[in-house]
Each structure stands twice: as C-alpha cells, then as structure tokens.
Image (cartoon, rainbow, N blue to C red; front, side, top):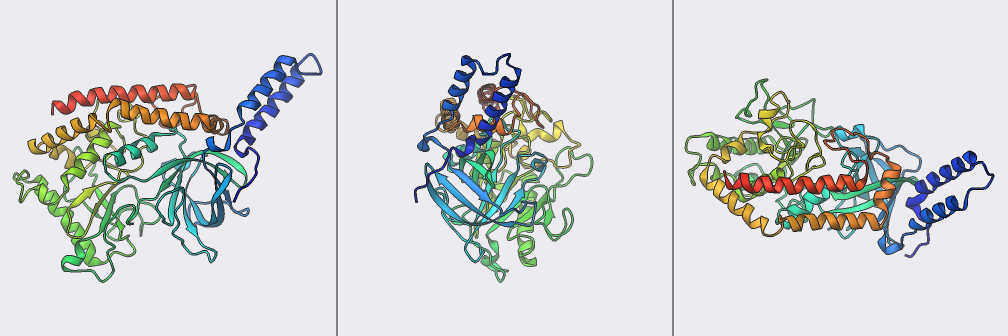
Length: 472
C-alpha cells in the first residue's frame, strides 16, 4: 500500500526553526528578517527534504493514549514505513526494557507482535526471520549510535549468531523519538539460538541434556523471588578471582526459565556446569579427555573472548553474558549481548582504556558486586588454548576483523545515518552532544568528534591486541 505523508521526522527540526525565526524577528531592529536570514532558513529547510529511498524505516507506535511502563506490556498498534510504503501494520504489546538505561529519558522498549485477537503472532519484520519478540534499543549515552550494531555485525561475520539489527526512527503517538536499533530478542528459536526445546517431561537420560540457555546477569522482573535464589539461579562452585567481599557468580535460568524449569533439569544443568568448573580448576585441566575440553565448545569460548576484548567491554563476562547447551552437545558461549558501554564508552574500571584486558576486570575493581568468573584467567594458562586463540585472532585480522573491514562498517553506518538526516534529527530531539552522559569516557561536541574518537579508539585497541595476543 502506497501512502503520502509529510516529513514526519523533521517536525522537531521545523519547531526549532520556528522558534529561531521568532527569536530573530523579535531581536531585529527591523520588522522584517534580513535577506541573509531568510536565505539561511530556506537553505536549512531545503536540507531536510529527504527522498523516500534514503529515509530510515519509520516505526510509528500508537498507544491509544496509554503510557508505556516497565511491566506489564500495554496494548498498542504500530506501523512500519519503508520508503513511502507501509511494510507492516499490526498490534503489539510493549513495555520499557533495560536496567541502568532506564535512568535515561530516551527509553528502550521490548515488544511482542500480536494478532487481531491480541494473541502473540510470529511475523517476519524488516526482512528478519519471523518471530514474536522484538526490541527497540535506544542509543543515548552511546552518541555514535552504533556500538551495538557494529559488534553484532562483526559477530555474525565470524559465524557466531548475534541479534540481527537495523537502524530505524521511532515515533510514539506522532511524537518523534529519534534513532533506534530494531533488534531480535535473544531466545531459543531456529532462526536465533538454535537449540532443542526442552519439554516439561524431559527429565532423564538423553532427553534432559538440552537445550538450556543460562545467563550471568543482574536479576530482572521475570525472575522468581527477590534477588538470586534457588528458584531462579544456581551458584558457581568456584569463587571469582579477587572476590574479597564474598562475591559469587550466579547463573540465571533463561531457557527453560525459572517458572518452567523442572527440578531434574535444574539438577542436570547445575551439575554439568559444576563438573566443567571442577575440571577447569583441577591440576589436570589440560587433559583432553578429562579436563575442561570435555565440557565446552572451545571455539565458541575463543570467539566470545575476542569480541569482548576487541571492544574492552566493561560489562564483559560478568553482565549480559549468555551461554547455551543443546541436547547431547557441549556448553557454548554466547550470543554476545549489550555492548553500549564498550569501545571506550565507560569512564570507570579502565573501560575507556585501549591497553588493558577486559577479563582482568576483578583486579581493577574488586569491590564490584558483579565480577568475572575464573574461567578466562584459567583458560589462558593452557598453551593449547592460547595457540588456538592466536591462530583464530590472526585468521580474523586478515578478514572480518581487519582495520579496513571494521572501519568500512562504521563508514557505512555513518553514511546511512547522514543521508537520511537521522543523526541530525536524533540530536535535535536529544541534544546530548557536548554533554556528559553517564558513563562517557569521551565527550565530543559534534557527531563527527564522537565518530573520530570511536575509530581512533578501535585502531589503537587493535594495535595493542596484536602485540598482546602474540605475546601470550
């Protein structure tokens, strides 16, 4: 269906121009603005005329006057406009999502696509495989707007699944909300985390071996009870390094979730992780048959390590950390998740540094409640693991992780956001350039300065990692 509409995402910009015009009119010694002023305003207005094919997809949400809250999801409708045509229109259940990010005025949202009867509906959206659970992530403290987009694309280039993403613009009840990243929610699905669906009655033998998704993370509203408890998680058998305040590593049940997982399934997966940790901590941890390799998919651990270290993810290994185990398979790390504070965008615990290991977070910040498991430090004590890591790093540096490959992605995103005027309109809606937003390590006065910082940071990081990985 073709539609005709005005330049929806320039409403805020036009309001700014109107206020500026009134200011100039009141301040002028003449009753009429100068010819130069009129020409500047006309030129600014002309710059905002974007051809349909250059616009980002628009996600227009209508809540029928209701306020979106952090649980429960409210009923709403949404339309996706690509170019000058509607590509999707339907119902949704939507809520605010995120933890620390909820402090920001620009909110992220989780939503389900729904049918006319308000039931969950699997649909293909924006050329993503069909599903019902989606995320609208709101970059705010990340003023490049692209840190999550970049790392997820790099992960998929390495043949490790990560949430598919697309830049969009969002309106809520006709109010422009800026640039968002439309994303897949991480969940068990043939097009996402492709593992067996573990049923309630699969409690023994081969049946109980998978599939599971576990998470090291903060507790959220979907977890049963208060904080970490026996209902929603189990505790690592080995204390994290430098845990001088009695900190523990807790593994949250994600799939099956805390409400659905059976006691037998809890026993199996907690025992499996416990056996892996015991093998890794043992003196014979390098033994191929009885050591850690008997329990984990080493390649997935190496790629997970590379992505977190490449970006010096200050939350890496300790928050938003997923792992999964399929039926009759070993434990795999990933998918990666939530890198908005990575690539030098954190001013604490050396999150902005290019010359530190992210896995050594505990050494720098031993007082933090959420620490990194001992796994990564111990794995690097195995010469065989180190050799595999070095080989994989060198392979990737000649392909998907070369300087050129990474920077070309940034150039592509920059052009996409620029030609659509999305960057400009986002920072009109959210004027945060030149302002410290927690936990910025760098504050640029312009979008160009923010992007320059990001690219310089990445090149310095790659240079450091080349030397450090070679010297392990």
